[in-house]
Length: 496
Picture (cartoon, one colour):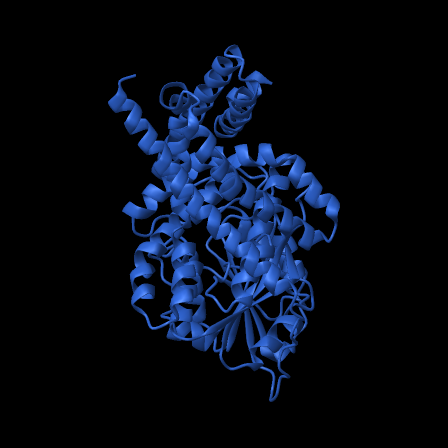
């Protein structure tokens, strides 16, 4: 390779490492904030004075026949004065879900007394549109929202509502817990990833007085806060993140309850998980485009602006990881020649990205389970989890591009109960399948490059580098092959 190309390769490599270290430093900050917060005593909410308010529980649904009955069973058991509680089933389904809901309501007339089955003529605005329409049908002061796979306990309102005794509180958010986290390696990994967010990051931001987001479900909104923020809007596919920032910019405070969890279900196949991560990442980029300038120009404290910017820009880690994956092997072969550059910069990446990420996962597991065994399991499986996360960056990188170039978009629900991912119409399904197929090809190509690099360095007698590349290759090849089975089930059946 010519000296000029070697210098370009070196420059790209150092650029990706520098960017990854920035994101690693932010994880260290989150860990520090969490450790500082965990030493503080839990403060009881102020005492509620005056009459109890009216609460509307909203259940936005789209094609959820496998989980909707369990949702209705749980939600109708929530304790609150009957005269001050209504339940809206916001059913935009076009499958058998409406019939299942109707049968359940007829079979349980006493529990169904306060339930309204609301059907729209079209799915305009998707979840945001359904919630905005439903708000016009009730005069409730508060809205509790649950997605189809959530299972709240009867004391949900009794625990959450006292936080609203403070008139400045606009949202109270509960932590998510997962009833199928031990079902497979995929659900175990998802549980670990999400615990890092719900156990560590959300608690850290709340305790430090920073902005954090309503997670779309398992939380309660004060109507006044929602209205002042401008209500639900469909111009992003993460309407919950969008309205969260708008409300907090208006001065409303959010409360997070890390010690109170609501059970839910994790996606059970890889393509469903990819679909979920794609929507979250795409929506985060859309909210960044929409809100970041407003946040930076606002009069909120500088530390809140810095954290909000870090939160909204986090999606850019995925293009960096994809670039790193493309140039890593060529850099080692042609650019570094195992010179001092490798030994100086690679440890920084290991400590500030991989090390900080693993520490975040271990902290989330220990403090959610209070068992060191869970943290040890994370430590022992860390190489595989990091390889899995690296491979997932391909899907999320595509989502970053979509979020930067598109406004709004179809809200593709993450299917639960083992159902396959489906979009709306035939054209949408074809586009989605084509996109996911292209992602699979890219994953397999990157896995092949990593595998070839592992073989090359093993032949050079550099077993440590070969093993590292082999682990990374396993993430790309494993995700690519499993995704092929999900996207093209007949091929998977033939291989079996």
